[in-house]
Length: 276
Length: 312
Image (cartoon, rainbow over all chains, first blue to last red; front, side):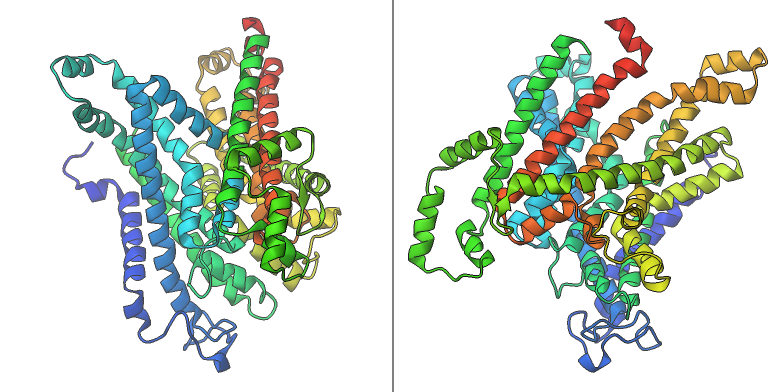
């Protein structure tokens, strides 16, 4: 490999999408600055269902709210909830998986049977049931998807820990008096990190879509919160008269998911060159 | 799969089912809504406190969790999943009526998916790293990144609203009604499946017997369709089985968009009207169907893969 070239020049694809992802995140953070005094939740009812023009680049909805503003603010909801979701799954999955792999026996059996239960089941069904029963909110949607998604990470972490569990250096460390917490922190968790980070990075896109799907069905964000899935579901009723209501929020999800999927793939190629 | 293995597999399934049934029961038990009030509201009545208390007692809602769960479970085993109070019909009747439309939709979308993904996947593998491969890979990439509910809405906008070719509400069971929902479901699946076909075929293409066959001068098309393709079918069958299962659960969104009368649509309306018996019955049913399908897929290996037969 050409060491003279910088990291970014060697991984052009990754760099481009990392920059795009940063732009998306910055747009979400600075949405209030970009939109100025336009509010995502209140609009001028006399301006309802206006076609896209210079004033409202994405048009307005039935309450006269500016779609462009709502899409930008929607990025905040979608991105923050997706990142929280992925972080929650990552942490829960890693901890349970490492514990199951390290201790084995009854701990392993209990954790893995619980994981089997979730895996032996079409994910979205339970997520819909959980979200629906707990009530519609972004928090509950995150809980619902987290409940059905952690086993993937737990299984990965477990198998990675099992690989080194009986390695000589682990036995040596245990014999020389390393305490369990130290073993977990020093050897077991770090051993799982790379693979789990790759998995998490490639999962961001699909998690974002699942959250949007729940919101679309009415089990996630509730009006007037600007959220892409929820905006699509509102726009659906105006398909005939105002198709821009459903085109732009959908496009926002699509573009964001493409960027994060590309970023995840790029990260995987860098960290784990074995897989294509 | 040997008899012993099958038995342990069935035992595992039973444990998982009990776990899932308890989980769904627990969820509805701790949920903030009150089923009695929902029931009265569904009938358009405003009950007074006394009526609610009496009804709660009658339905056994004041019993401890374990008692309630046991009663529900034993009833389920007898085939009685309770009565849906939002639709005032037995849960079993409702689920049965919706099962076939959803299966039909799932099968139809799988047929579309196979028609698209098998040729594209093989093409992409054979012409690896050539322009056609890049095009196919780009398409699959966009295919997995596009939310299916948006695809559904866009298709509807184009074919139903703009061109007026197809009905906006697919409530019947005709081919026309099935077309758009099935295509919508097929988009994301085709993208995933094309990648799998490509990987599987590539793997086979790099095996030694292919090199051997080429060295002996066997025609390339004969190698591809006579050896490589049949050998790469195995992982694809697993994928196919798994996708039938996830389709059963994953059709909700599409069914809602097209107002299609399937299980997923029923589940969503059950949840919005807090119809707990219906939700519980639905979750349990889908779990059972899903597991049975996975079992059938595993058993079918015996017939597809000769090596498995020899092992016995």
